[in-house]
Amino acid sequence: MAVTKTVVLKFGGEVVADGRALRGVLDDVATLWDRDYRFVLCHGGGPQAGALQARLQLPVVKVGGRRVTDEATLLVMKQVLAGEVSVDVVAAAVAAGLRAVGVCGVSDGLVSAHRRPPTLVSGGGDAPVDFGLVGDIDLFRTELLTHLWAGGFCPVLNTLGVDRQPTADGLTRQVYNINADTVAAAIAGAIGADHLMLITAIGGVMRDKNDPSTRIPRLTAAQARAAIAEGTIVGGMIPKIEEALDNLAAGIGAVHILPPGPGVIAAAAEQPGRVGTVLVARDG
Image (cartoon, rainbow, N blue to C red; front, side, top):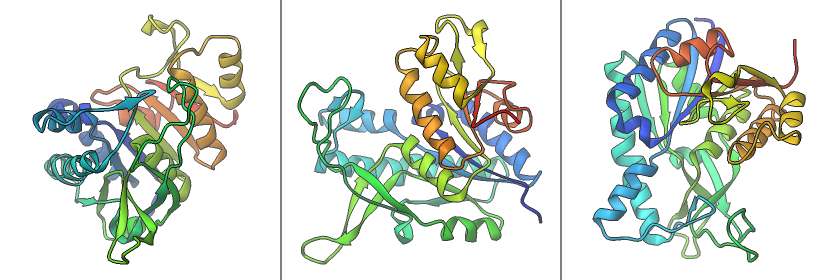
C-alpha cells in the first residue's frame, strides 16, 4: 500500500477527557488512514495529572505556564501518561477501527533527552528556573514508528523521554517529563512529516483574538512574521507561531492550529486552511 501523506497529530488531555471530542478526532484519523495517510498520535495529559496530584494532595507548581517536575510529580506523570491516558486513547482508537498501539517515549530510547538546565522563561522572573526532571530532546529514533506503520499499526505516543546515559549506579536511565507540543514537533521533524496538526482551545489565528469570524486561514512564514511585528498576532499566540515557524524550518510540510471537533482533521488534511489556520514555509 502506497503511503501518500504522513501526519503527526497532537491533542491534550482535555480532548481525551471528552469522549465525544476524542471519538470525533479518531473517526477522522480512521477515515484518512483508509486513504493511505499514516499518523502518529501524540497525547498530553495535563488535566489528568492535575487531578491525580490533587487526590494525592501534591502541589502543582508551574512557572510561566510550565510544570515543574520533582520526583513525586514525575511518578504522577508516569502513571497518567503511560497508564491512564494512553490506555484510554488506545481503547477509543481501537473502537474507531484503528489498529492502535500504545507506545511510550522511553520504548527503545524513542525519545532520548537530557535534563533541562536552569533557564530564563517568560513570567519566571529574572533568575533562571530549574524545572526539575524535565527533558530537552537530543534524539528521536524513528525505526519503531516506521516498523509499526509497515505492519498496519497506528502508534499512540506518550511524551515521556529517557536519558541517553545510565544513572550513576548504572542500574537504569533517568526518565523525563517532556511537553507534548515539543515531542510532537520533534517527531514531525524527524520523519519529515507532511502535516503537523495541533488541536488547541484557540483553534487558529484571529485578526481579532476575541472574534472567531476574523480567523486567518493561511499564513506563509513571511506573513506570520509580519503579523507578529505589526501586532496582529499577540499574547500567547506568539510563542505558538514562533514554534510553528521553527517546525517549518525543520522540514515539516505544514503546521495546522486547529479547534477540536468532528471533521476537523479530515478537512485540514485534504483542504488546508478550511478550518483553523495552516502555516506553510512559502506559497506554491
